[in-house]
Amino acid sequence: MRKYFRKYFGKELYFLQEKIISKPKASTKFYNLFSMDCINSSEDLKKVAHNIVNGNYSFLGNNIYSQPFPNWHKDYQSGFTWPLISYNKIWDHTPEKVDLKYPWELSSLFHLFPIATAYAMTREKKLCDFYLSHLNHWMESNPCPYGVNWCNPMVVSLRLIILIETSSLFNGAFSVENRESIEMGIWQHLLFIVNNLENLGISPANHYLTEIVGVLWGAMYFDESNLLIRLLRKWVLHTLDHEMMRQVFPDGMSFEGSVSYHRLVTELLLYSAILLNKNRQKLSVAYSERLHRMLQAQCLFTLPSNLYPHIGDNDDCRLFYGSDYYTWNKRDARYLLAIGAVFINDSDLLPKQKDTHELATWIFGNNKVDQLAQKTPRPKQGLFALDSSQFYFIRNDEDCLVVNCSRPSHPEYGHTHNDTLSFVLCLKGREVFVDPGSYVYTRDKKMRNLFRSTRYHNTLQVNNEEQWPFSEDSLFLIPKGTPPKALQWGSSNKEYVFTGEHYGYTRMPGNIVHRRTFRVEKETFTVILRDDLYYRRVNEVTVNRLQLNTMFHLAYGVKCYFEKGAVILSVNNNAPPLFALYFTPENDLSVCLEDAWFSPSYGVKLPSKILIFKKLSSIPFSFEYTIKKL
Image 1 (cartoon, rainbow, N blue to C red):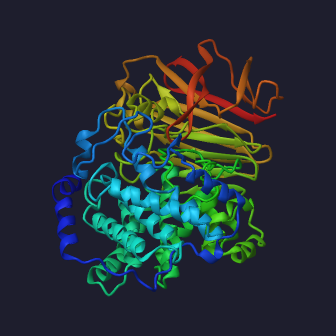
Image 2: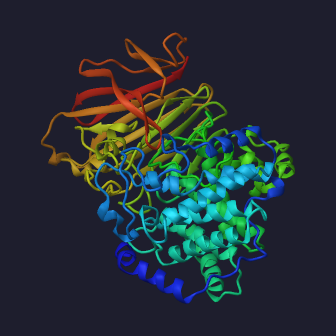
Image 3: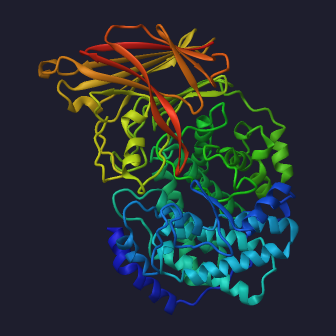
């Protein structure tokens, strides 16, 4: 519904409002997120800024060189360039095998933030000149509301925030003419978002939330003497609070079922809270409490490897880059945990590594970060659960098992995969069995569907069927039925236990149920995994034997070889073995290693391996594996 509203009315409403509402003045009482006084010297940041000035851009797996300016309308992966037409007609001019995300990511202008922060440190005229010429070229090439870079209101919102935060860091370096031009650009962005909110339809989600956050920045930036600005401030404060409660489970997990999107949503809500705090706006107690839980959830997902698993979709979206613009690992959320730790005043969240504190020091100053770092965090050891979203964790300082028994609050739409009862495992600080990620969206339907398939997760597959069948053309739709259940979750003196089951295969004759149990020995962190299949309606069974495949996706770089009843794992061919997976050999069981892919970030895939146990079996079926450190 909202798509059609935007297509037929959004443009007209934007032009009408632009004509009858004059641009408000910028507020003299606005405090932006990042303070010039807190941005300290960093040679790495200077190098990054100069690299960008020299025309080197990095985004979505692409490293491109473009001087003096990039092509803002180009998909650098396929080479396709969109015409400069009305934003509501762009979708009609988008062929298959091209990816809108590439121009969107470049035109979010994330790369201008390192330029602005480096200028705040050095006051180099070269950086200011680049910023102005770059921004002017973008505005001339992308008049509102024409072209590919206006067809996604979420991207417009991200760009609006970047414009406000970066321009504020130049502190009087602009001429009056340049300042007015930037303010007009900010005003156009704000009006466009207000008239194109994605708040209707089946499941308003991270797009709508990002647009609310964009309105928040715009409404705080302009002076409240303007009636529209006053109304927007009132609306956005209420709506932001409402969306926090709607889009985030009580346990702190984003309702879309993706760890990467959880990081993005946490980032948006955390930055909003800090901005409101700096501008003397009160947060509700409920908002503050749920934000704290969101950060705790992100901390739980951070493995001993310091990275989080790509459970569900990932598109690399992040607002502010520092000196890690070229080097950020897209599975590293420690920069965010550092910011949240200082804001919430929770030392348990603060990463030990000081190089992850850069953005936190730019927001709060070195003193606050250092004071929190002196506190001793509590050890992360034992059982942890996100009860509402049904993620379960068993961990200590060097080992971690994450069990996915989740489903999003909406049973069809979201960013989940066919990964129920899948798991990831980290031992001795190393990832052993991983989630392969998501790779791409619209550019390659075949790969998109492969990465979200049952085969591409550490779970059991029956007769090569999907847990939940999906259409090859509906790239963000997996119609899921009865939600999975956690049946047992607890510990004894010697071990931790989780048992859960899912009902994706109950559509098959006999109503097949998959039950999976993990037992983890406390002293050694030996993992015993048991799979069971049973019929709920035995009298409906017509097939005696079924093909059962159980997948274990090896972490990138992990090697293995076979022994009788064991798979021995090491980090490379010459290193001593670190782990072993033991099983009971059977005549009709085959164990093989097949080629696969692992995607560490959007648009990137690396060759990897799947360890697959294949068995033709009748039901009821039981099989057990033991994963042990050597």
